[in-house]
Image 1 (tube, helix red, strand yellow):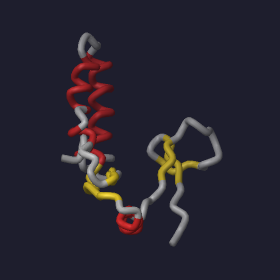
Image 2 (cartoon, helix red, strand yellow):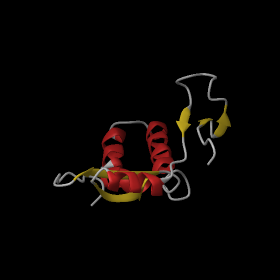
Image 3 (cartoon, one colour):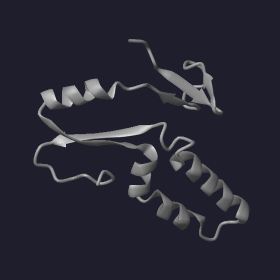
Image 4 (tube, one colour):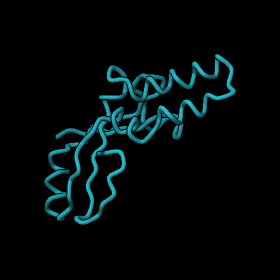
Length: 113
């Protein structure tokens, strides 16, 4: 196992300790261990989905359309550029995953159906 804690700033790896709050911090997750742990704790695993799939099911496209109302062309293009970065499979859409587990009997599953 290796330490995969990392920070990203301006699309490049950066020093985690420099500029706190001004960069994204990520960690590679071992989903198989997390899945085994959730079973041991008697939690139900819904599934693992891509960030793009999850955000689309949560309504990010509709939200972007609402946010872009009455905006200039430049502002709209910025909104949809950022949207594409978050959900497109060749960008962050498939790179990041969302893992959902819950107590058995709980019906909530928004974004995972």
